[in-house]
Structure formats: structure tokens, C-alpha cells
Length: 124
Image 1 (cartoon, rainbow, N blue to C red):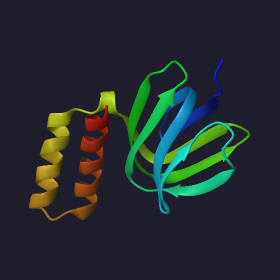
Image 2: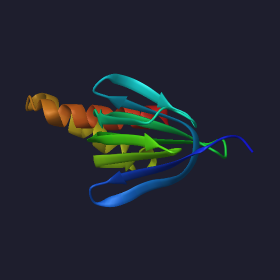
Image 3: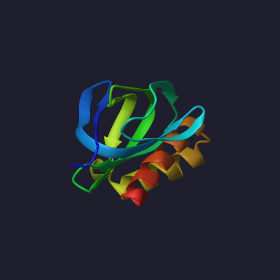
Image 4: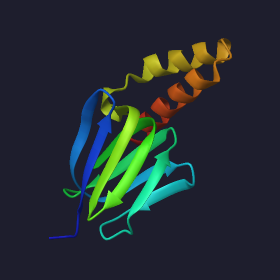
């Protein structure tokens, strides 16, 4: 059996995804980071962006994450997000409309959220 780490992706209002993985890629304030089994312990601040999880079964889970923290120790990775949505939960047309509306209203925060949602769907 290949080495794996246990991943918990949790939003403020719910548990989003939990399971075994061989690689997790996330955006932090220090840049993008890839975490594999045996990684050095870490604590970081999550930036808005897609999180990609390569599952132990060979699949891929992608989520749009907006802020929060990432921690890793003893092969357990926790992503504690303010907001997180799995790519399969995102309606691309609705996200596109939200992006257009945010641009029209010059709402940078809403534009960033909509852009992250669309990038998560594109990675899926």
C-alpha cells in the first residue's frame, strides 16, 4: 500500500471532505504548497484558491477555498476554511454570472470569490 496522509477539509459550517490522500496542493500566504506523506509539520494561512487533493484511490477532489488555515503533523492534514465548496457543488453558469456582476459593481472581494469558484470547476 502506498503511503498516504489523512485529510480533513472543514468549512466554518460543515465538514466538506475527509479521507486518505497521496498529495494535497493548496495556496497559502507564502505561495502554493504541496503536502505529501512524511512532510515536515506546518501551520499556514490559506489564501483563496482551489485546493487539489489526489486521493489514495487515484481520484482527484477539487474544492474552492476562501481563507482559513492549513496544519500538518503526524500524517494528518487539516484545512480549516472560512468557506469551502467542492467543485462538483459549484454551478459554473451561476459562478460566471456572479463574476460578471462583481466586475460591474467593482466588488473586488466578490470578484475574487467567483474567480476561485470558476478555477476550481476548471481544474475538476
